[in-house]
Structures are given as structure tokens and as C-alpha cells.
Picture 1 (spheres, rainbow, N blue to C red):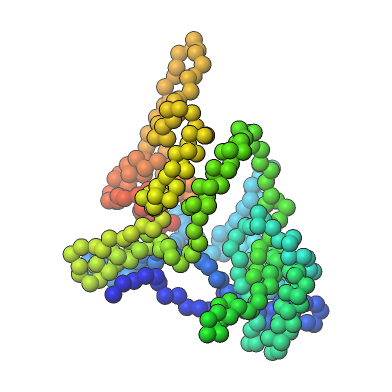
Picture 2 (picture 1 turned 45 degrees about the horizontal axis):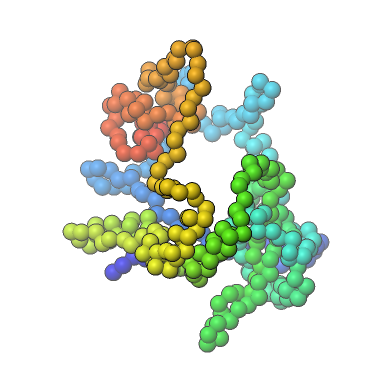
Length: 367
């Protein structure tokens, strides 16, 4: 038995309408084609009974010590040195931009969708008859015309209630059949998220030394020698595989854990065999004599000063109010020694990474 990956159900993220105009809608299902696979979340168990523990969060008033009900809690936003207070209903209303769905805004040439405008993974839409009857026929017509004219549909996309709106480009994809007439790619639209004006950044870089023609040609030769056809399904996540190997060893009561081959590490022997001589020639062309890649650059000397150097005061656990920082949600800024000292002072035994200490503090305080 070998666990390669966690089995996931193939279901739609949302089933929403695609509005083409007043009174004209297509029912579509939104799917996620690629998503980062993560380790399953852990469950806390009672040390004695081995029963699952349930976490309960209660909000306590700092002044009176009484438990606060949801209606007693308000929200605020600092503005101009004052606290602008909001009710929960007002916050919910502020987050509402319309009903979930896709609204057609217009069409653009496919070439206008630039790769450097990528902001998040795309989704995929396919017609869904359960939302609107007859959606498949109209969806196919829209897809065929977009493919024929090589254009994309620009839409306003609200995924769910109280979700922020996005501009998206619906990039058409034709059906692709492989061997034995089996479908390799489904016909539909990729939902590519577009950036807003505030998402663009202006970066300024210092002008670097330019390579000459000989150096560039040698680099091209190296790239040709080391180029291979990349297939994502050929590389397993070493973190996940190691996690599953430990689960297998514990579940099957094995004495040893099966070793995991990390396929993300470079194959030094193959690289040397295919491009070893080219790499040496490239190094001679680019770097000066006596270059050592393992040697760290020397530290810059500080300017001389007549003023005596002052030691930086070290912060102690007494200077930090851990409970106050926990209420503010700033425990990540507190150092590990301070967290350990606080937990030791309140009689809580905890160890491990910093996140484990933060979780122990929040659990002790009921946050």
C-alpha cells in the first residue's frame, strides 16, 4: 500500500449565472483545475480518553470581566486619530457588491491578456443545466465564436455572497481529443483574473553590467543542453510524500519509515555529464580568475566614528505584555524566549516551533 495523494471530490466551486445582457443568462459551474495540495489539518485529542477536543471561543470584556454576546461586539476603523465604529450589519453591507455571478462587459483580442498581469490561479467554467435550462447550446455558440475570432470575454465576477468583485477574462479553450478519441481537454472558458490599477507596481532597478555576445552565446548552448520537457505530474511534493510515509509507518506498525526521493533536487551528475565542459567555459568567460562560488562576499567596512558605540538594549519578557499582544493579534512579533517565559509562568508546558507556542498562548487565553 502506498499513499501518493489525497483523494479529492470533483465538484464545482460555485454554480452561478453568466449574464450576457438583460434577460439573457447562461448557467455555468466554476471549477478549480489546479490547487496546491496541503497536508490534512490535525485534530486535537484528549490525552487520557483519546476523544476529539472541541474549541470554544468566548469574548470577555476587559473592564467588567463579563462574557460578551455577538450583539455586544462592534467594529471600528481608525481614521484621523478617531475610532469610526461600525455595527456588524453595517460591515456586512459594506462588503456587498451585488449578487454572485458573471456579468459580460465586452470583448477584447486574446493578445491583450498579458502573462505579466497574472495575480492568482485561474478557474474554469462549463455549462450547467441545473442553473438555467438550455445553457449548453448557448454556451457552445459563445465558445465557438470566441475561438473563431480569437477573442476573450471580459466579465465582472462575484464568486459568492459578500465576496469582492473581480474583472476576469474568459479565455476560450477548444476540446482536445487524444489517443482512442479520449478527451484530454474539455471545451470551456478559463477564468483569468485581471489586476486593478492599484495592483500594478513601478520598480526601479540599478543598471547592471551587460553581457557580451560571446557570453550570451555560451549561455544559450548551456540552456539547450539542459532543456527537457517539463511535466508537473512527474514531480511529487517531497513534504507531502514524507508526511504520508510517516502515516503509513504508524498505521501499518512498520519499524522503519520508507525513504522519500526528493525529485526537486538538481541531478548534479547528469548536469555535469551533459554540460560540464560548457559550464567551465562559461565560468572562465564571465568570472575572474580565482572565483570561488562557495566563498561569501566580504563584509563592508563601516565608516570610522569618534562617538562611542552604544550597545543595543535587549528586550526582556517583563517588557512585553503577552496578553495584550494576543488580544491585538500581534503574537508573531513576540520573540520565542518571551513566549516560552510566559507559558512557563502560567504553568503551561509547550515546545516546538514558534507557531506551536502562539497556539498554546491563544488556547490558554481562550482566543
